[in-house]
Amino acid sequence: MFGYANPKKYQKINSVSIMIFTTLAAISLPWGLYMALFLSPPDNLQSETVRIMYVHVPAAWISTMCYASLAVSAFIFLIWKHTLAGLYIRAACTVGASFTAICLVTGSLWGAKMWGTWWVWDARLTSMLILFFLYLGIIALKNAFDDDDNGTTACAWLSIIGSVNLPIIKYSVQWWNTLHQPASITSMERIMNPAISTDFLIPLLIMAIAFTSIFAILVLIRIQNEITRRKIMVKRMQTQNG
Figure 1 (cartoon, one colour):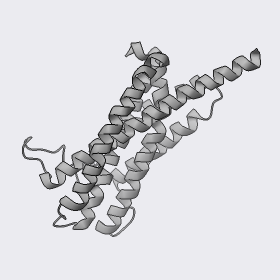
Figure 2 (cartoon, helix red, strand yellow):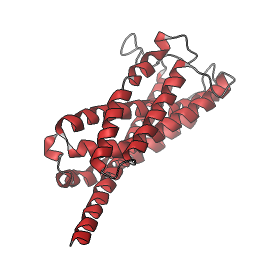
Figure 3 (cartoon, helix red, strand yellow):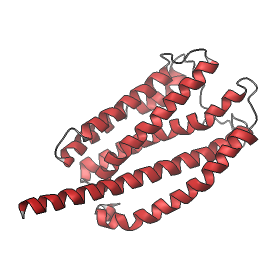
């Protein structure tokens, strides 16, 4: 991990990583969309509305996974001043916010059809909205300081403090009476007997791979852009002082 604290060393693997995830996304996204839209059957209760799941659920997974990774990166940055961890925080917060927005919008579309309302102050929905606001707070903090390190430090603290919302998101449907359905994939009586039919599970997992690959591509590109931005700032300062 510490071998790549230097951005120059990190850049050596960055282009290869982007190529790998781009290939994975180019394969999994069309395949997943085809299975979700054409091969997957309609649900007995939700009919064709169930197809929203193939975007909504992966977006929800990515939004929570991204914030968890922000909290871990924040801990690494605050303890060891790991440069790449700080760059990741600045790069991933906007991407995480985008996936959270997708989750909220698709969830509202799903709820309008199944619950008869676009929004309810449901425990799961409310905690996801709080997650979105936390992302917006991190984005605001990173742009609120002239010094990048001070901005990243503020983002790191908010990432760690806001991580208390993650278990609330996960267990909200168990802790409170909620309209949101419980988890279908993590609640397995046996590995070979999931709570969701394989007709829905397989395209859902493929779409999850596609969304994860897209997330990785966007974050890697934004990290590269952040490194380039800092190089430009250093060049400008050297020019002004020279």
